[in-house]
Length: 129
Image (cartoon, rainbow, N blue to C red; front, top):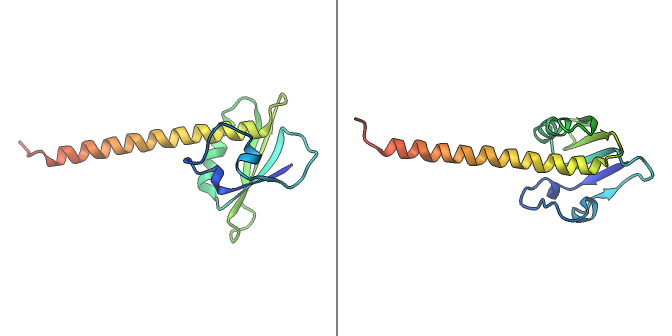
């Protein structure tokens, strides 16, 4: 099964855990009738930055048997992201969970970074003793 996913899926402002992933983000199914646990997602306007980070997060899930991605050609701005799960877990659920966890990690890094920058700037304004 191939599912085309728009970049709105990756946008942390637009990503919500409610609703069906395919209909909510206007993803279209390109092939039908395959196992729900073995899916290839086509992510447009994405590259190794998202692919490798998301692969790392998703592979930590015990229900995931395989997760990998390929960039079909350097001139194409898309990745083919493959997820295979065990025990009947739908691959789209593993993707949803991985995106949520990756968003949370990115939010934590951003919050920590901004706090440290603020702390640094406040320390720079104090006179040296």
